[in-house]
Amino acid sequence: MAAFDIKKLLQSVVAHKASDLHLVTGSEPQIRLDGILKAVNLPKLEGDDIEEMCYSLITEKQKQYFEEYDELDFALLLPNIGRFRANYYRTLGNMAAAFRIIPIDVPSLDDLGAPEVYKRLIKREKGLILVTGPTGSGKSTTLAAMLNEINMTEQKHIVTVEDPVEFIHQHKKCVFSHRGVGEDTKSFATALKYAMRQDPDIILIGEMRDKETIEAALTAAETGHLVFGTLHTSSAPGTINRIIDVFSGDEQPQIRAMISSSLVAVIAQALLPKLGGGRVAASEILVTNHAISNLIREDKVHQIYSQMQLGQGDSGMQTQTQALVKFLKDGKISKETALQYANKRDEVEKATLTLR
Image (cartoon, rainbow, N blue to C red):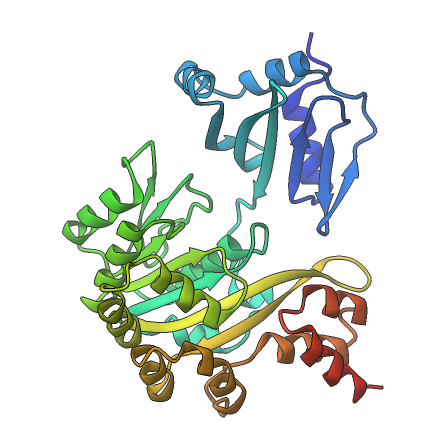
């Protein structure tokens, strides 16, 4: 017999407002609350318990896939409980699982307290908007809120390509075609190739993980579509370098030209523990202007950061340091948290000297 009912366990995770559940042999079930792992007051799990619990949630086909590849990614909808992104894997020969809770209600930009510039960015007719950051930094939530804003205000066809599909949008003013890699399409690159024949206005790419996908995203952005994508990078200029570095030396000048003409913005975010509980998103925001386009084209990405510090005005641009210092001034985070998450620790330390 399994130690307990996995559905009841997931229900309690949702009730606790946790973001994740981890099942690993030799440990109690662990949940992530406000970014911190906490053990649930239940017995330690054995490999057989985890296997029985986890297999009860999947189809025979998914079970065969897991037994062949020792990895399985999928989305799970449990009626009256919630929606989850799940990953099954093996550790020391035993089955283990991680579940991420996906809210059924898509948040609005106002719910997230997102910077005002996001509402201006989504009005663009074409170009590439990237939301980046480490795993668990809220990229999917930010993108879902942006698409939700478009859904409430404009009539568009939005194609999303994800692995697996996370937020499911109701058709309000927009029509959504949600495509799950592995279920509805073979790969990100294949889905993007055919997306052009599906008359999309907007394309969301869950992850720009290889050269083919990045190239297809840039082409779509250049040919009159608004494209949203994610990358696992922690700074805005670093994101541009990451994209360029995927290509060989002789391809890079052309890719720099494509990025310089199609990149609208990069939002690099991190979720920080908030004083008094909860979390807050610190965002570095790069909005492309003429000067930044030129720096990308001329292979001077290292100079973009100083442009971001200078060229703010009404653009909505901000460095991560400025976001952290503002949170410190507003009493939202501690100095230790600011320094722990800072990309430029010395800059933050210097800025905090002027604060009370």
